[in-house]
Length: 337
Image (cartoon, rainbow, N blue to C red):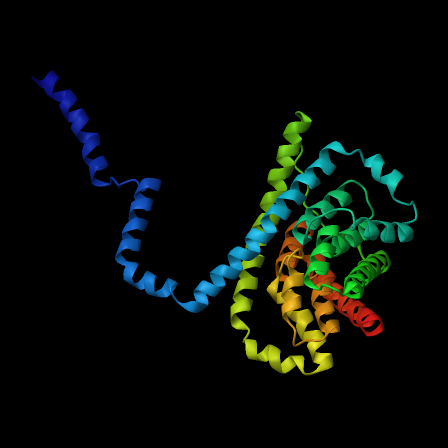
């Protein structure tokens, strides 16, 4: 009997403290069930809150920014991975002039070849720098590609029918601003300001390296695109429309106002011409500033530049680009429009 009872005592001893301190595990299923219960309980309040006009407008702007930008971001990420994995570094040394000052306008003019918006140009410019292209030339391409590519120029011609001089003004002012910024970086830029994220090394095939590069850029640029889209939607809702009408009557402030508006709205360069065409109360020069500044400096673009090149770069490059793009648009508009 003592022998039979001993195992029972051994089993009973360890079990009782375990039962006492036992906690129910909280897994994904439990958390999902808890979330559904909260949604069901708060359903009347959520229904009223989601029906608010300001929230509906915020949602529309946020979704439109993401939907417009995401295909071009994916295009840019894929092209960046192709450049990083399959294009030999010697290729760029052969294509671009050896003189950095001459490489800047050549790279800026190359932006007219690649269709895409600013979301595509950021990862591509990062790939150029990692492949040995001088940063000044890569940055000139980054600014010019979303502003003077064929899709943008065609959409501008459609939005402003019968005004070929306006299309030419957009091309000239955008290219001028991109080249000037490239030369400024060549003169004043420092390498420690520009810190593109290190590319993950892959010892396997080129296909594996390609997909690793795509995942890397999507994680960096995609997250900041969402942040920038949310910020743009918030500012779009906050700015009263009556302010725009008051500013349009002042020829100087109207140019500055539309330049700032382009930064805040963060509209994709393939669609911004139609928005500018709708702002009929503003002068052509003011609308040109909107179209030159927007593809070079906007909230989502600054956020993506921060993710790809680092904060030290973005806080210096974005304000300087805004000033140069605004001055370029005002100069070209005053002469040709």
